[in-house]
Length: 118
Image (tube, rainbow, N blue to C red; front, side, top):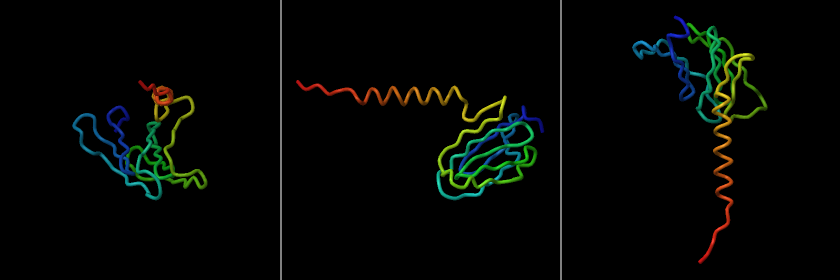
C-alpha cells in the first residue's frame, strides 16, 4: 500500500485508512479514549500515522494501523492539538489555522461595535 493510494480519516477517537480507488476501509484503529473531545488530529510521514485525541498522542503503523506507542501527555490537558513533522507537513494546515484566527478576530471586532439608538 502506497501513501498516495489512501486517505486517512480521524473521527470519533479512531483513525481509518480508506482506499482512494474504491472507498473501502483498509484498516481502522480505535484509540484509547478518555476526557476531552473525540476529535482526532492526524498526520503521516508515509511510514507512521500520528494521531492526537483525548489528550493523548498515538503512533500507528501506516500499513496495518497497529498502535505502536501512546504518550499520555500528562499535564497538557485534553484540547485540540496541532501536529507537525519538521521540514514537512502540519495538521491542521498552517494556512488554515491562520485563516481561522483571522476569521475569529474579524468576528470579535464586529461584535464589539457600539449599538445606536433612534
